[in-house]
Length: 193
Image (spheres, rainbow, N blue to C red):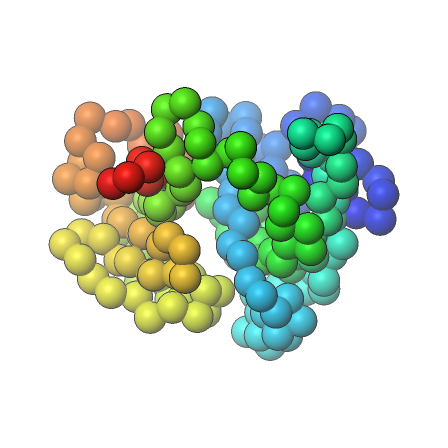
């Protein structure tokens, strides 16, 4: 659960919904946000604020994690994007202050062979495609590239993909669009591939 200054907010079952995520959770089961990593949260915050995408400032976040030595507190600094500008979900840029607690050696060796998230697929209304791609270009500082129906924004690790709903069936045949906009796909990388 996200927390700030030592206070835990359980937005899925508690009385507080600081990031207005509950309405999305009520719509469908699945991904309702993305956290993009950064090395310099101060620069990211200034860039996003100047672009009119965030007014959260730098938020201190923490959560308890299990380790081989017991429970420890993972700490982060995050900049949340204005939820009014991210109808697809909670989007933030985060810097890990304790990456060793999140990227523990036991995690990349999952029994199913998954080593990491390769990309996130965002489905949008056809009329919103260009504006959404432009917004993510400003959020991620990544020049979008068209590849078939996808608009791809490459990142140091992974990528963000955006597709118009009219082309969604060509990208994920047989899948249902549960809402618009919709964080639909989360392709993963398998170990050794």
